Length: 309
Image 1 (cartoon, rainbow, N blue to C red):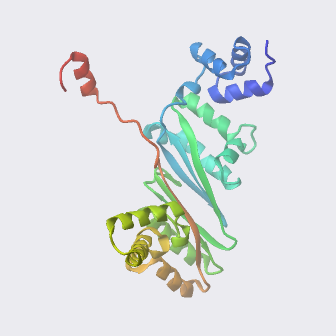
Image 2: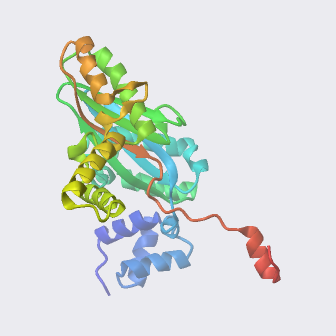
């Protein structure tokens, strides 16, 4: 008989949201094998969260939260948009974003954090929600921005409720200038980021793999050209690419006659001090998640009947 420890019971409970005594019994029945214990609980109908863990969660909410010179952005996924409009889910996302503001800006740190005045961790509370609402949910990602002086502006697109929506953006402006002006400017730039989805602040922030891929595309398009000519073509092509995808070189959506860099330079006179764009984060709900295709019920019925849809 395996020695069933409190840590083993806790881990099984976190995974399944089953009761403590049920978890202890399951581990005893399976000689301490966690995976077998999960299956045991499922067979008994006692596991509420584990059976939902494999479902694709690509809906949900993006939250932004800020305090002084610090701000955080968080994405929490659910299976359906219906759950994203659930008040319990919204309250969890909002509170988790506030907790993330005090943390290290990682999912692991946030999961282990406790709700204020409670022994319940964020991870525990999410498991409870899964069991209560009946859908898989995940803390997908979290980021944190800080400045020593200035502002971190935010913008939420497709707002569901205050601070929660489908696209969230943070923009960090470091400056000793007028805070009210900086806040307005920062929000305008955050709206720009939401609309244009830049990949980096400037060319130095574009990852090497992306630069190599773009260079190879240019090389293939101009195959046969002398190498000295090819280098000039690649250099020119990359400059054009950076103008499209880097924030500072993009035409400002609020005034297409100026780049974001030019807008920032002109802003210094109004702010009264130099203004530096130190970074940004943009989360679009569900981006990069491979969603399951909705079943073609007409085709399924036709196939079952032996006819074409």
